[in-house]
Amino acid sequence: MLFARKKTPVFILGCQRSGTTICQEVFRRSRDTWVFSEGNRLAMTDGWRLRPLSDIDELIDRSRKRILIFKPLNDSQRVGEFIDYFPGSRTLWVFRDVLDTVQSAVRKWGPAQRNMMTYIGDALRASDSPEAALDRMGEWPSCAVYAEKLSPATYDRIVDWTAQPISDATGAAILWYARNSLFFDQGLEGHARAMPVRYENLVTDPTNQIARICEFIGVRYSRKLSQEVYSSSVGKGSQYEIDKAVLDACQELQLQFERAESLSNRAEPIVA
Image (tube, rainbow, N blue to C red; front, side, top):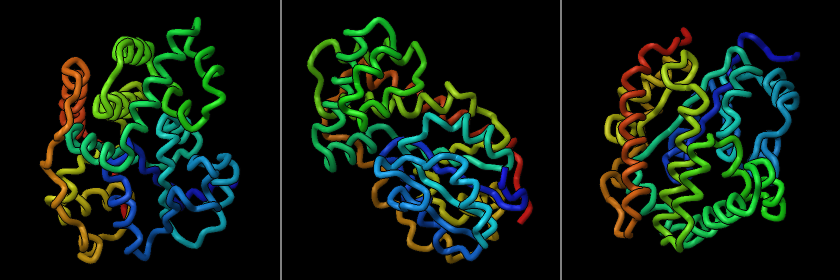
């Protein structure tokens, strides 16, 4: 294994439209880091997924930077694999208020997330197992990503929630639930090498929050890292109607995240 022990890969994960790009861009202003975004062909495939981990290992080994930032958002379900393969890695899981996330997602993509979650629900209902459903989804691999490695309880909820026609906003909320449930299903709550990052705190208190993240991943903090971080998108809420059962489950999960964030001071910082 070529992994350089003095270097730290950092994986920024979470749900789409949750502020992962803002978190990523913070570290483009640091001299300690090199950022590999979703569109970076050295680190990512055409499907915005991480290349084989052996390739990433070599990329880390060749880099002159100490901290390597990766944002393979379509691979959030593989975080346990990343933690095991890279023993010195860190994970930042960015979570955002479900109503603001839904508002942003529907404005950007319209019915796309509704169509994906409905398709996943249909495939699960038509199959004997989640594995068989994933095989069935092979004709739409970019959608199948969002059905990988979910818990049996989450599969059951998707089946239940999509049994009847759903709105665009409900589809976006179901995807928010499915992606963010992975944080807990993969045992990241209280994990020493994983930090939940609440978007609202990041953009309303960037100085303290970014300094906290920097300590965790081993980056030297400077004021320029907190520049160009704005809170104008906080608290907008959603003008779209979300199914009550889905929204209740999302808000319960959101409370779990807020509690998990209070545990994140147990994470092991890296001394820069």
